Length: 247
Image 1 (cartoon, rainbow, N blue to C red):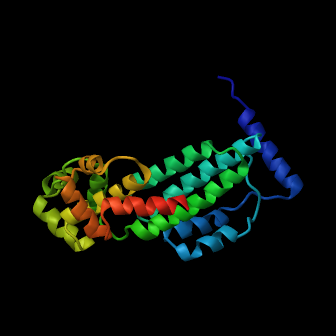
Image 2 (image 1 turned 120 degrees about the vertical axis):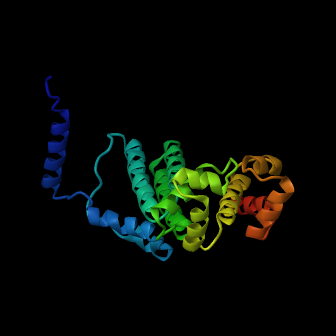
Image 3 (image 1 turned 180 degrees about the horizontal axis):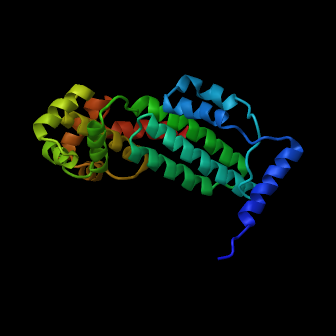
């Protein structure tokens, strides 16, 4: 089969142009500054990292300027996602954040909107790691947490979770409490409340529907558990945070 030389031609042309203009590509070291901020959840360093000047130029990902910046956003969000997972953010949450930023990036009408989305993504991934990142858990406990995150819309029992990761229920119960400081039941409740928080703000589902989706036994029990974790009823929470979002 005849080799297509277009990739090599584009590559060599890019190298030639950079040598002619004495403009190196932005270094990996520069990229790692932001990677470290996210991975370690260093929210106090976010704004400073955004102000660090580039030590080179971007690659050219499209001849169209807006398309180029959208592609750069995809590249950056992919890196942010991997950094957040390395920082302990649950994979499903990290990937959901990634998908939402990339999909919204495609809707941007100009490079300014893309840049604003980039900065928002960097801040949000860093804050998410600081708030929810998990470190120093064993691989089995990470697997249990992943199982819980995926099955929040189902009935989750100690026995089902133990079977999913290849442990006995008794051993899982003991080790999970040792590593996390809470029972599996309490952890499932916490994760369900976290999911409910987002549904209250970003969806129009009724309390009854949210309660059913997240497998609370009754709506009144959902309200009780939600208030225990947040200090507000679901209705109060939705009203307060939607008002905040509108500012």
